[in-house]
Length: 269
Image 1 (spheres, helix red, strand yellow):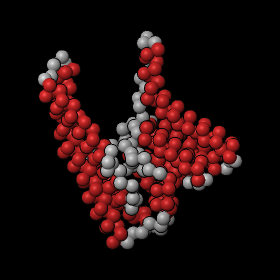
Image 2: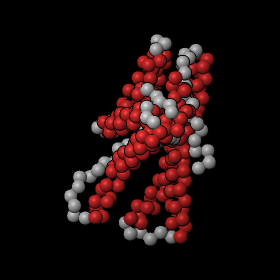
Image 3: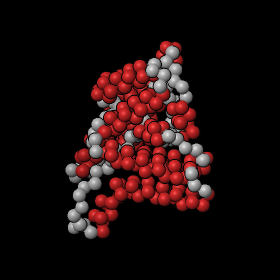
């Protein structure tokens, strides 16, 4: 589900926010956290539900690593931490590079196409950052908070990567449903989200259409002129810039709507 899709903007987001708002009135923080985890999993699994199993497996295994690191003495703690890093990088490496390696080692080797799980780079490095914080600071989050740290839908598939010390205290803080605070967060969040949406749909997508046209012609044998070639290259550069900048702004805005403050991202890439 994309941030700029009608389904997200007009169905998923308002329904999720309304449910979150009324759950806050129950004064039970765990209900709120659980709801956000479930909503985030629905968001993540919309494209391919089977990828949820990979995400949940990654969270559970990393949580076990985290508990072991937290409860171990220095020498053994370092070994567990190293194994945790190797596990995460191996998982990422398998999905991103296994097919490429097999194809280059033996082009006739028959291997099923490996579909890259959505956002695996972001949530894998999120897990590594979590383990690193626990290793250095001897802190640990509950499975619920760890799950929300990784799956929270504003940043799960496209970043930014956020840190334990930035997010866990906000999840632990008692949430207020006073109209003034809710309205303030909602207003600021919507404003930042709209700015990001404008960058994505008006700048990135329209500029990208220009570069895509030239690239398609070249792919079919067309030889571009000097100005066409440089124009396509510059348009593609701007497309990537505004695409990431827009998504980062939308992530910051979405989180703020739910009372969570992400650090400002992509100010000077």
